[in-house]
Length: 108
Image (cartoon, rainbow, N blue to C red; front, side, top):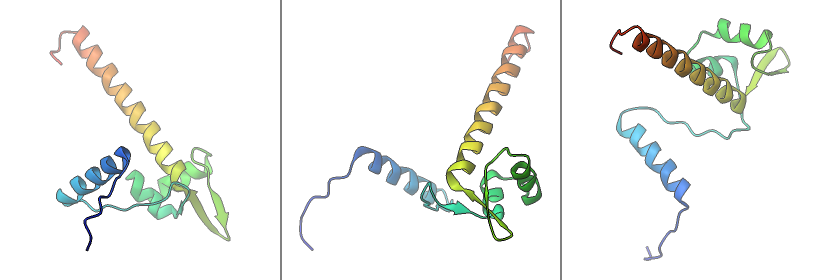
């Protein structure tokens, strides 16, 4: 083995740190390209919802998908965009509730 230095971009080091942190906490880590497609069950697992609920979202056009034969496939990028949008909505609702509680002197 030689003593050659390895130079990594800052974002690669941050990614590696995040991966190692998750693994140290006992969490599973999966790396997936953003353009990859996932099954309905995989997407449901990522969103922490039931597969039937996910299928309903797909059929309502909330999350785009394609069909491969009779199977639905969802782009990983679209699943993550939906998840981020839901997180933003949840944070806004929680912030509104906290503001309302403060206005009413509820101590939050």
